[in-house]
Image 1 (cartoon, rainbow, N blue to C red):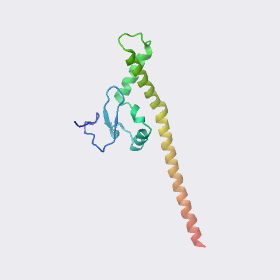
Image 2 (image 1 turned 60 degrees about the horizontal axis):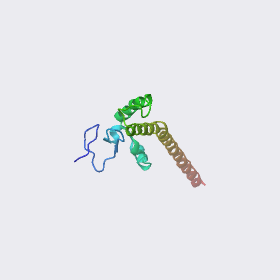
Image 3 (image 1 turned 90 degrees about the horizontal axis):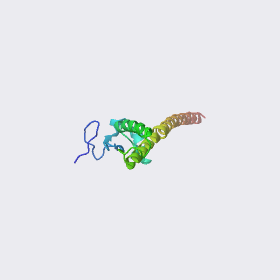
Image 4 (image 1 turned 135 degrees about the horizontal axis):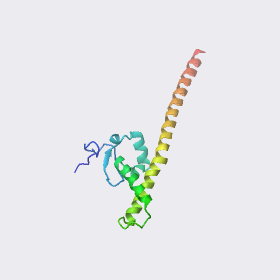
Length: 137
């Protein structure tokens, strides 16, 4: 059975980059459909960060569920099992880590990479100037 992207409803082929939601839906998405660049996706896979990614719907649901969870005392609501409460706490922590730690670090890495490319261009330009001056002697 073919795997289908939850957003575009197109097949996810063998060689397509996709990410799976670690939330309640467990859906799979083309990285482009959820606005994740290939560079960010590669970094996420390298650091196993793709294992804790939540799709927009589950992330929104986790936010509202975490509000409900925060409003109740653990173990006091007989309608929600302790296991479900623990899973919600874990999901909330992973979402918070992604929002407050991982994304800002990825943004900083991208900025440093851009600055590095600018410096490389300047060094190459300087080298070319030095070589042309050396040839003038």
